[in-house]
Length: 479
Image: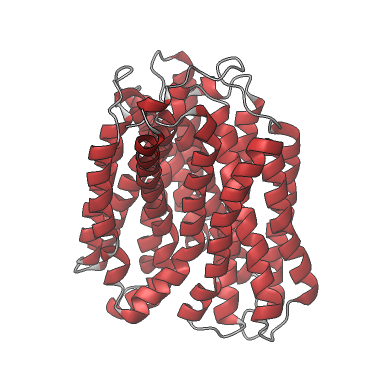
């Protein structure tokens, strides 16, 4: 088969998988700048009530990632991937036209479910239909899409709300979702089912455990950390996770893939780094937007646009480090370099940040370093996880890696709220010092994540099938 026929097919698969990943990650952050408009739309709603517009998506997304990954691996990635996009698109439409806050929150929960279904399958459809020499580049492009979505979300949200209304934040997903469904049905090859559904009881316990932990962490500041419902969510979540793991050890079709962790230091380290850096990334993104609007008095749109430089650099960083990693070093090299670049920023801000706006001299270079760190680190942790597992488990691998990052994101957002709440002045106003505490938190966790990456991640690749890369499809297999 000629090269001309192969390349368009490859890029069609990349665009389809990356588009779904972009949509899901975008909706984790794009709603942030719509909150003031939602407060005006629903004036009788309290701030805790409004926060459920974001929490409902985050909690359901995190809770269903791991079960959805197992289902995609067993029932076939194409049907699960397309089904997830359909659910996400329909839920986006419901969000846009929700007449009340409770219905909007319910539609956001459906959106989270759709995202949880399509994200794990996106890595699977990409890697299963990609030749070995393109796997690292494919992962870097998928990571670039996620990194850009996380960084560009606030800016895009602010732009849509200011130019149109909060409804546009959700309506923009609909045409993209329709295009992705059509592309998935035309481009992707079906994969045969490899077994029945995973253990139903274990799956419910796993989802309840992750959901409970995420719910408790997300609302801990609002509910108070020592309140009965916060403790019930946290303790109940841990208990459900323990029961799910115990059951998975003994079940023939487990809900939780223990085999991916057993004797696999690089895979374990990749998920620990994803958890730690996910905490840092979301804490930085939220803390940065709040700092720009609170201390430098930027508008929501200006604060969002100030983050777009980091979004562009995140995409470039993921692609560039994908090439560098493939030639000169493995996931450890890329992860450490990316997180070191990020760590430079909060370290310098401790000395140079002030109440005086200094976009060109402080914020622009900071965005460049953070953007590179996001792109390189997301790509390297996803690559390390994928390289450490057999090809038949790609969706489960992606689900566990994204679950770790989402739980980290919930922890990061909760940490920002807690730190800022305890760092106000005598008049209850936040100061530069309170934001420096947030950035110090980011610095400390980034250093810990670097240590984990140095100790645990492989330098030249992961452990897959006993260290051997599985038999790859010939180049003509990409259709």
